[in-house]
Every structure is written in structure tokens, then in C-alpha cells.
Length: 361
Figure 1 (tube, helix red, strand yellow):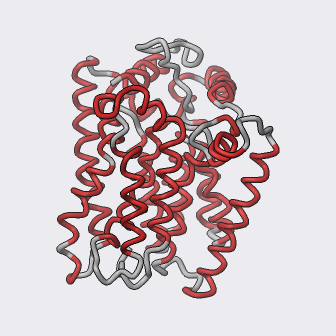
Figure 2 (cartoon, rainbow, N blue to C red):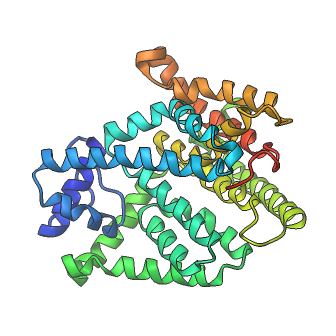
């Protein structure tokens, strides 16, 4: 529970006015790099002995895995004639995600909870509850600013109430820790947070699981400069824009259209391919993975063979990424490029899923 130890100790540091950034908590690499606000949910646990708090947090992650597995499966296989898949889909998805789920439990991280918040943001938008969606998305940004990548999508969809609520939520969230630490200390914490985020970053063309890093390593001998990042970002942005424009033309622009599921969670899942993050963040492909797996189970899917082929190839680096299974050398290879490729293959398998196959998501 090394990551949970960081959150636990950071919450205690916030409560007692101790150093929050630039100090290792628990292990030598245990530096806190999130916003001061991200400490607040851990304060109730920080009031408990660490052993008790860590057990409770472990059980909370376990319960959330079960809840979210059923939530996603039910959303995708909601039609009565497809309910037989709602039993198998969580199991197969869990096997595919086993390495990431084990890692989340082992480290005690927050990636699963962020995914749940992002899913609920989507669900609220589908119900046309823009303010609630904006609050949830704002909470996500206070933990992981990486998800600013979703902002252009909300602008495209003209979710003005959502955008306004996001801005207000983030603004309030940056100020709320002042209640605990005081105004001047909170301002210092915000400055230190900005420094901590920049220190955690690296040249994107060298980040092995990003699209830039993959192209740089596989085709350019690892010698590309920052121009590659700009070029790939431009091509990616144009490609996604054309995809969304095509969907708007064919399926309409309303959020109730089922195609919004693919668009939204495509952007969520692409985050670790576009920014430098830790390997466990590839669990964010979960909804798109479930979509692809459900299509692979159905004989009537015209793209079934291709979907299965893509998923089989992706399974090796994505699910078998453990030194106990493949050894340290292969595990390192999977961690530095294999996961990035596997994530893109899963997304390809989900995107070719015909609209007629999955009837409710």
C-alpha cells in the first residue's frame, strides 16, 4: 500500500501544518504530487491508525472493483436478450485487467476512483444533468489535470453549464484546503504543487508508452525532438475531430446518442498514450475494453474476427505484465512500450464495434 501511505501521510501533514511537497512519505520515491485538495478525502482515514486505515482502504478498492465491473457490464449489456453476457463480461474483463487491478490493490492508488468519477460524469451528461457532471469532472481535475484533454470535447459539444461548473468547482477546490492549513500555507502548497507536477514530467518523445515515444523508438531511432510531439498531437487532434464530426453527421449531436460512449471513453483511455503517466493508468481503457470484449462474444458482429485478433495480441503485454509470469526482462519491455501498443489495439477493437451489436451504453 505504498501509494496509500503517501496519501495517508500527506493528509496528516496537511492537518498538522507539516511539509507536504518535496518530502518522501513511506518509501524513498513516495513524493506527494497531487493538489492540496486531494488530501482532504484521506483526512478521515488519517485520523485512524495506519493498519486500520490501510485495511479499510483495501476493502474499499475491492468493493469498488466489484461495483464498477457490474456497472459497466450492465450499461453495455442492458437489453434483456443480451443479459447472458452481463455474467461473463465482468469476469472476462477482470481477467484482462488482472495485472492493473492487482497493482491498484497492491499500491492502494486512486486511479480506479478517478475512472468511476469519469464514468459518472458521462452518466450525468447522458441524463442532461450538466451541473452535476461539471462538479464531478472538476473533482477529477483537482486530482489529475491530465484530464484537461477532455475539455475541448466539452467545448465542441457546447456543454456550457458543465464548463462553467467545472471552473467554479476547481476554483473552490483550490481554496478549500485553506480551511485546514490557512491562506498563506495553502498558497505555498499550490506553488509547490505546480513545481511537483513539472518535476514528474519528462520529454514526451522519450516517454515509452506515449504515441510520440512509440514512433520515436520504433521508427526514428529515439533521436526525435519536440517537433514530433507537436506533429503527433496535431494529427491526433485532427483525426479525433474528423471522427466526432462524422459521428455527429451520422448519429446526431445529442448526448443521448450511443456513439457518445465511444467518443468520451476513447478520450479517457487515450490519456496515458498522450501524456507521461504511470503504467497503472492504462486501466482507464476499462469501458472501451468491455465494449470490445462484448462485441467479441457475439457471433452476429461482422468485425468479430478482427476484434478477437486485436484483443488476443493486446492481452499478452496488458494482462501478463508480471515478472512472476514473463520474467523481469519481458516485464520491462511490456512496461516500456508494450502497454502503449496494447492500449491502442484495445481502442481499435472497440472503435470497429458495429453500432448494431451493443444496444445500450
